Amino acid sequence: MMLRIAFSLLFLFSILFMPFWVSVILAFLGMIYFSLFWEAVLLLFLSDLLFGIKEAKLFNIYFFSFIFSLLVLLVIESFKKKLKFYNKN
Image (tube, rainbow, N blue to C red; front, side, top):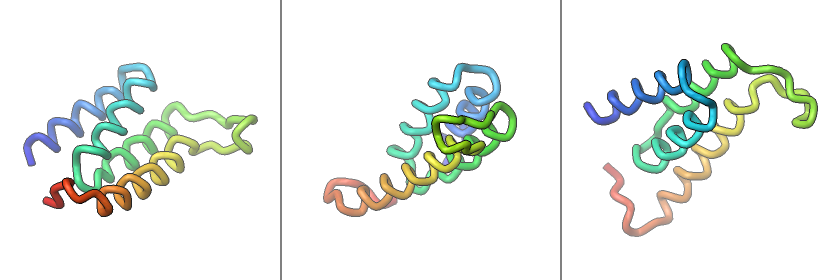
C-alpha cells in the first residue's frame, strides 16, 4: 500500500514538473505493476486539464492522453486476467 502511494506521488510530481514522456512511462509501469491503477487515468486527465491543447491530427481531441490511458488500462487489465503467472492480489 505504501509503495502504491509513493509511486502515485512520484507520478504526480512527474506530471507537474517533468517532461510528458517521463509521465507516460511511469503511467505504463504503474498500470502493469499495480492492480487497477486508476491513478494514472486520473492524473493524466489532470495533465490534459493543465497542459492539454487541441490536436488537429488526432481528430481535434483535447483529452487525448486521458482517453488513451483509459483504453490502455482496460486492455492491460484484461490481458492480466489471461496470464497464468500474474498474481491477482
